[in-house]
Image (cartoon, one colour):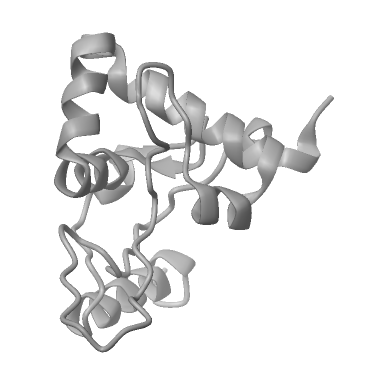
Length: 141
């Protein structure tokens, strides 16, 4: 039987269209999605390393190889407790850092040149990422 009318064909067409129109898409990107914490961890790590190198060095020194796990869990905890908007406004505090980690760069109010670093503002789409119910703040037992 011909299977043209199945969801994976539709999803593939969406991915191809978004990838051709400015979204970051690579087949297999979904494998890097952290379902437990509902975060796309490679971009979180790259963002912090590129925009806050001093904090990144201190975190690497403090946490070593466990940094991705520790950071993901801390960000998830902050999101659950404070909400997305507050975390974006105030950042994420971590032991050993003098100031919170910024997870966003706001456009400057003055008309001076604004420089962003990394993949700031990038739109990302991954196929079939799914989620983990425990990562949702309203799914507490």
